Image (tube, rainbow, N blue to C red; front, side):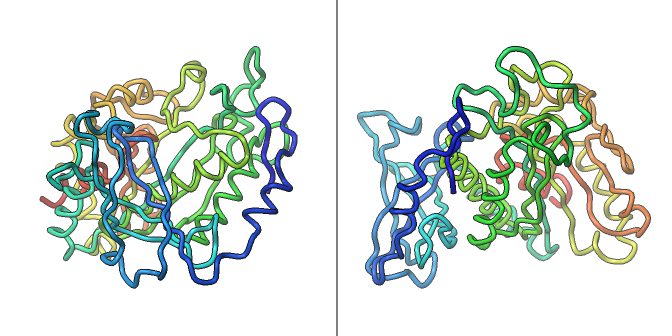
Length: 367
């Protein structure tokens, strides 16, 4: 693996990486990296501890504490917050039996912190578990230099117009593929249900898909895949932006979303199109409520993206249609033809909280 210097794009630190990350994992000690969502509701933090033996199940991982005053989740005079492990995955960076551990964040009374929406989501998923809810989420993101300038864009001016970048091949149009492919492999190693990846419409913009996942597993896996993406980008000396519409792209450039696919056992069965179409009424009824939780800033981020242009719907109006990427909800043409399958909610922003999004979709349709 090489690092990309954001000014020169030259390999950096290869020998150091080979020497230390190339070491064989320790034969008896286990490194567990605890990962959590901080007070922004969109950024991730992590820290690592050593175990003498590998825990057999997630409940065996100990609750750990951290300084919530340094993550926007507590005051300095009452700073201790707690990490409760909820899911563990093989660590693609350290290898061996080492683990990445997704965690809930809890306050001093062991209640969810303000930006911990997992518990509420889990309660909803438990309530609807008999419907066998399946989710898939399409995470779009922009690779940027450390000065927040999109990778591959000229420092002064703009690249050629959109059109040649989507699913593209070539050094003049596909920027950052080494980050994308490394992330893909790392997610496979971690046991995540990564479905695929592709270059997106805006130069430097990419997408990967996580799913199919059932219930609460969707939120866990998407958050961990984001953590892995940030870690991979870090090793290449670049950054990842989940901003749905960075300032530099406010012109004639596509924004970034996190389109969410959803189905129940009834929708997937023969004749399931009736259940899919019936779901539109519930989704329409909760549209304004959904728009408030589909990005971490109460809908403000999505107002910059959902303009009715660049393959988006309008933020203030609910719509649905077959094969229409300008609607709030798209029914894929293949689903309409086969009369069964799934629906795609195109409203969530790229920086959304998947726990909130999946809970809202489930609640709107099934509760």
